Structure formats: C-alpha cells, structure tokens
Length: 97
Image 1 (cartoon, one colour):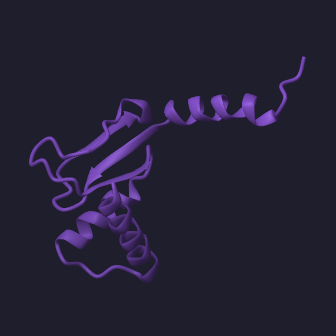
Image 2 (cartoon, helix red, strand yellow):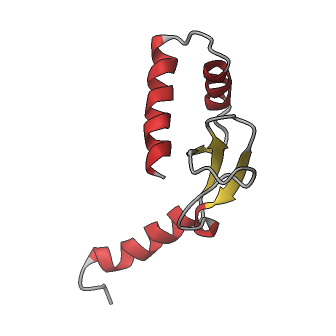
C-alpha cells in the first residue's frame, strides 16, 4: 500500500540521512581547534572547547583547503579572489552558527 503522499515517506529518510552525516568543525579565529562530529551529536550552541567562542565554521569532512585558507588569513597573507570568497562565505556562515 502506498502512502497518501510521497513526502510522508521521504522526509524521515532524508532527515535520518542528514543527521548521520559527519561534518568538520573549525574555530576560525585562531584555527587551533577542529573536530569531526555527526550532525545528530551537535548541541544547539556550538562552542570552542578551549575558549567558549562560537565562531565555529562547519564544512564537509575532507575540507583541508578551508584550514589552509583560515591559517593564511590569520597570519595576514594575501588570498586569491576565489579563496577570499570562500573565506567570506565561511566567516558569514560561522557567525550564524
């Protein structure tokens, strides 16, 4: 028997898949803390365990480029336009988390 609406069947599956995803968390200000966690294990407010700052970026698990960009930015090095755009997008999204 089919459900009344395909949404009723799809939404729980998509939700479970999203909550099972691993994400990388990175403290942007000092770039001295990063961690990989499952989305379902994240608390409502994500904070750096060292200083309690909430300037935490969330990215995909294998994103090593963001760490390099953040470290270059921290020491004042010039970034390419593409990397500067990624930095600004990440900074803005981290301020929302």
